[in-house]
Image 1 (cartoon, helix red, strand yellow):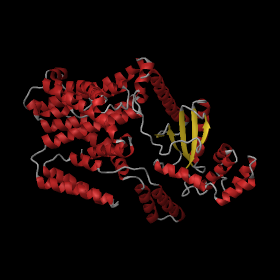
Image 2 (cartoon, rainbow, N blue to C red; image 1 turned 90 degrees about the vertical axis):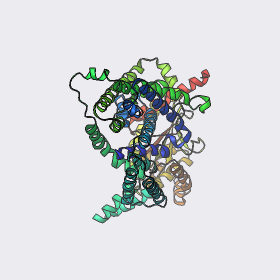
Image 3 (spheres, rainbow, N blue to C red; image 1 turned 180 degrees about the vertical axis):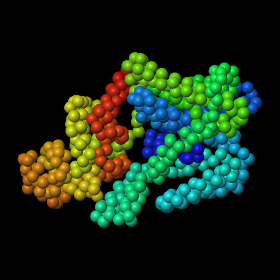
Image 4 (cartoon, rainbow, N blue to C red; image 1 turned 135 degrees about the vertical axis):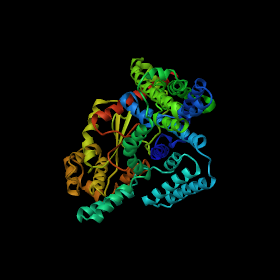
Length: 551
């Protein structure tokens, strides 16, 4: 389970480094909502459960099973947005970190100071090694194992070590220089295949990703398909024979668990979120609408994995069986309730739903350099409601495949969508891309950027200088001036400006799209992009309606 909580820490750190929580104050709302979703369940549990040994497991109702909660959101599909999933993930991670902290303080044995100091020292060593750029994996594996052993020897529950290591593991987009180095080694392997070059190419490609992403990729299958199922099988052990309902409703402990998880989470999280939006606490708007938040709050009542862990630490015998039965029942009820609530949202007045979603906070801007109509190349509606920015490479086959999709989107959203192309040639894999980008700019200087743009993407196998001059002839441009511009590199700085803006936004590959300054992370097919643009259009229109109405 330490590996499971290591993954939890990694996911939270990634949100701080690359997600919505780059703006630190945005953490406030889900944290306060999570506190409401922990305090009320505990109060309900203690009010129902008799004092004494039965009350020892009060922390069971604090936690949420991250994997099952996200799985339920996946079941409801488009009824849950990406922002809702991020909000819920943050909230349940706060739940789990708090629950693990309680385990460390309440359920751990007597703390041994020397072992605890040793664990902290090893954590410090891990930070120092990352700062100076040590990338050898086995060093961190050894340090992680040492931290885990130190936590165990100190009398602190070892899962705390997993959370701590995860929170210390940074995430960042792939760096252009690292990707170019990996490409160079891969090209060398292509020319002279050998085991040594194959191993080096694989190492360089892997190391171009951040430690956080590499570790998440390694851990996800193990935690999802091995660790969590094995833990559930080993610890659930619930006897479902005989009069299950009689045992369930005859046990104050089981009823306390059910009421705490289902009722406490469903009411406590919205209550905490409401407090977080009050002016005396900063008055930050929610990242999701109230209907979606209430439906998602019931998902947090699925406390399976962590709740079972705390139950196992708290009870033995009949009390343990009652606690496990309550946890199982609460998790089933919470999952069914949340699904019913998500589907029930569709019966609410559509206008009210739109307005509720429009009152949410604006997404964090990912586009580092804002669109400037005087500098950028704009196609479609100059004042379109939605702006689609693409960083592309004229020799990239994926950009070529996306070109007709963009044209179709401009037709479907005529008058509402403006499209901006920015250059991101990848010379390490596409040797003609930079010259092609300059050719588009040279054509633009003569008033036909988009004509050259379309021809370059239609025939990506003919991008050398004679081919480009031939395109200029087809477009009836001044061929001599066009060729002179390319030979002298007149527009190389203009292309470099776009490349710099891409690097500032953390863009490493092509095509990369931004919708209203927020990076789009879905598929590049027509259906997916159209759905994302429609969502942005609805949100923009709803915000405009609220502004006109003074809402």
